[in-house]
Image (cartoon, rainbow, N blue to C red; front, side, top):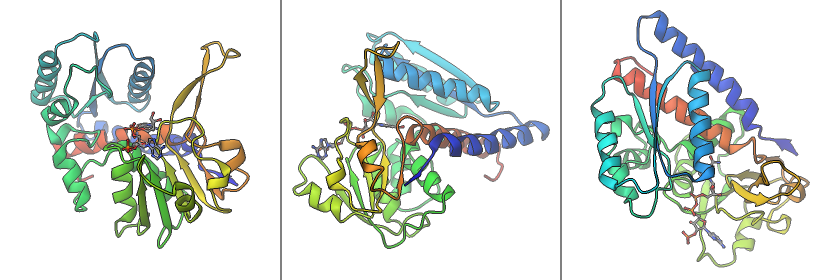
Amino acid sequence: MQLLDGKLVSETLLADIARQVEELRSAGKKAPHLAAILVGTDPASETYVASKVKTCKQIGFQSTEIRLSADTPEEEVLEYIRSFNSNTDIDGILVQLPLPRHIDEQKVIDTIDPKKDVDGFHPVNVGKMVIGQPTFISATPNGIMLMLQHYGIDTAGKHCVVIGRSNIVGTPMSILLSRNTNPGNCTVTLAHSRTQNLKELCLQADIIVAAIGRPAFVTADMVKDGAIVIDVGINRIEDAGRKSGFRLVGDVDFDAISRKASWITPVPGGVGKMTICALMYNTLQACKARQSLTY
Ligand code: NDP
């Protein structure tokens, strides 16, 4: 088994982004500026936003972080987005999901200017992604594509089973892997909670992408020898031995499956790191486009 090491790959790619930021600065251009909005105090969301802001600092981006209480009215959140849309210094806007129930998630996404939608969730950007036009591609699936590309993994003609059909992970992943690109050109099966015979389908898969949100859902008896296993899941499970009281595990049974897989991503240190990296690439791209530079 070989590790698809998101930490290592993202360090290399982030260094490349930092170098491009330096080039912008030397050319008298402004550095990318990412604005992040966090509503509520969900501990996982707080961690994600903190690490995105930290990464911005590391690579020379400017960042603005807005933290709002869980009972913030929807209109106030939309007002922040509109003000960021019209702020010429801000290149990218992200609103950390999930949002409290009283806020309409789709309305929030629709309010973001598609040219600043660096998460790639706006319908305009999703539509462009589907028909293969250049656009912001949702960070998690794009991060996985960057990782496959980095390791030179040949995906053409492979059967890929994507488990999970969310708008932010599973569905865009299935589209990207099926496109006539490299990586890509897979024959894709998109599985979900109503899929029958999931185990049989997985046993036919050369590549499994697990994006379910259930600890160790994919077990070794579902994976054929030599398969490539990509674990998107980030689940907190109690661990009294840790200072934090929890540890992070993925959607696949890493220990057992790593004895069968040819390549596998760890959790943490796999897809999560690549997601942040892809978000930073999108923000750099937005910044360059706004300054009319080619990406
Ligand atoms: P969602 O809850 O939006 O989607 C989960 C998907 O899993 C749904 O499509 C659901 O099917 C499917 N599912 C649930 N139970 C089963 C089952 N028994 N068999 C088959 N499919 C099932 O989750 P997300 O896509 O947002 O996230 C998935 C995981 O990835 C989570 O752990 C999340 O924390 C993590 N994540 C990690 C990121 C990273 O950077 N590494 C980024 C984003 C998410 P149905 O549609 O029928 O309900």
